[in-house]
Length: 556
Image (cartoon, rainbow, N blue to C red; front, side):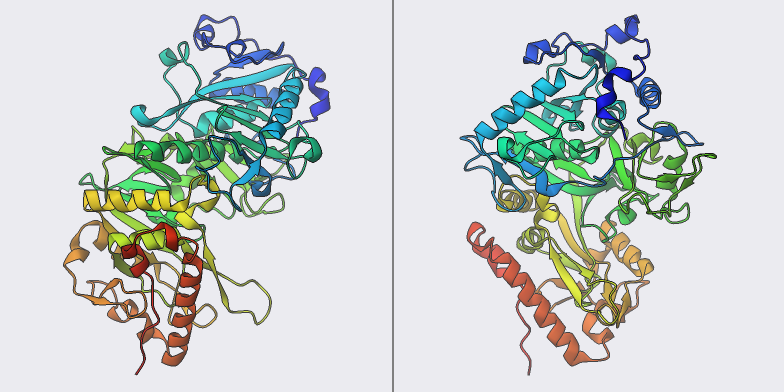
């Protein structure tokens, strides 16, 4: 970590300022045009190599032996969700879904925070500015300017967002600005926040202030939140998902929470990767919001994820909180002593089969992934548009209850739209958009359970990955549509009776349980959990979606 107080003692910036090539990367619309005053040495739109050099010269990180920049993020090794606020004003009062994920900040508190931010900015002797795009489709992207006090933060956001061509930089005019100052300390009494850490989003002023955290992901998620707010107005569906393209030009979208297999199943060597995290669905394309990937590194192996593992041996990758031998500079990806959430940021082109344009055609298939630890859901089911909206709004997965001896009961997790923390508007806005686009495009929707079969967690076993891939491949190549289907008695969706290459027994979850009565009790419990969770959306959706709710199967 950097000693914020040591600003004047840092080595002087490396000398690139006088180069003609560099001066062409400085926009005509500078910070002064935005009313931002600073006497700092400004580094505009630096590329990877100079940013890495500056980060190392300033003591912000070290090079690993194979080339990545290795940094530590201090006490914040993940998002500080409780410290994120949105300004509640005339613009947002009725358009933001206020609650747990979207906490309000009064305009007066933001004004005080902004004033103190700009004052603190003036104390920095060096700043890094990057002009970037949020969104790969030109007609639907947002111009974002990011101001950083750390070189590696500037490299991070430049890696993660879409990078303009050099010729586009001189005329760049920002629509939104992010000021990221880890050395800033917020005052809860004065700034209307919770702690010294603050992420404050002002949608009216088109300004995001991030202070008191060194975790790079806050910048990335701020842009995601902006696009999630802006795009629905134009009828574009923003999605927390991965996406890829098959050999016949068929796009598939994968929704799924952590641990469901979203990254693994979308990283298919036979399909082209559009992106791994955040996308928009327009009339003409599925487009990546980003120009990079942000992958978990903990216990990553060459065997399980060869393409992602290869990025840990490349210059241009940034590794957060990955343990490294101080002498040999060898990485230890299995060591979680710095963080369980160790991460790697790298340009998407580091993945060999990635899309050159970060875009693909509109989807042919939507896959909603869940890891059902109750062992109730089938390995695959076909959804109607109403059912798809229901399960999208539910955002269900399940996790095991913990590691205590004897505790085997699973715990249901519902995260609406498969990404509740990043959705500023009411979930029904995104759900209705999804339903409309599914109906308009004749999209096939599938619910895929990568969780347990043969019993709940502690009794059954994890769904065989071979079976999951076979079912998924059949769904994506269109052959599954020709299968014979049955109605699930609890959830009402269509479940295939037989699929070539897959044990038919596994397709009927109840048949895999030794104790059928226990299956019925467990299924009834899960149905109740779904219904209880969906009550918050019931008044915001139409009757067809309400009818898509599961119902406990009648017993003789």
